[in-house]
Length: 329
Image (tube, rainbow, N blue to C red; front, side, top):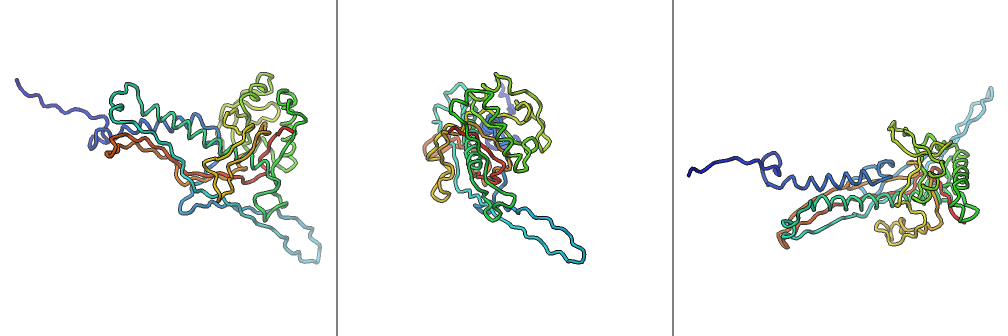
């Protein structure tokens, strides 16, 4: 019987050469990034700067200047201007790791890597959103600007409205009025919420209260960068409302992975009285040293597959006057 010589296609190879499973990790990577894109609320909303060659991200601010009257026959002197600086330190790597024994990898009928990618993606998205929400609320609760050198010169603390009673959160009309009071606080600082890409962040319960009582309308919202997104926005104010279980209102957070002695446990906080938040991307300063990275590798020492994903980022208050909260008494 003649021997048949064939040239099989190896779909797992990269470019038709090398290891036959070289491309298998792409399945995991795509699932992880895709899940983050679907689950993350704030990551695409707040710009994140790349931080390489240092652990510190710095931002500078200039205070407002003043005008003067020109008097005939007198040479006008220059007016003063103050400058300030805000720092953010990135010093922690966040890792997701799952380990699959060699035998189980062969015996599993379902796509384990894709499933693990989805789960790690959910965790990364939730973790990042929570960190951003924490710092947005902390920015709103600041009584003065982070740029101490320009305090009072066009820069100030956050904006807070305190409800008359805790039960007011169940009344859609009262909540809408409280949001309106917060909008007025922004406007009194020469900030137009409708043109600063602001969002209202709430828990699902308050979102449904506003939605069912027709205080929200569905429309196409255009961001300052020109992106058009479909969103539920507040009637009259035209500001998108985001419903997320990652919003930290009602939570007391301790032992956060990004908190340490060097940053004064910056990501811990008691937010049990926070009911809603309103903020612009300008309220936050975010940096990323290691973008979300992934790897699937086989360890010959213990004969197991390791499925890893990791990132290193930081976020903190920036322009506090662009953030606000509604709190219970």
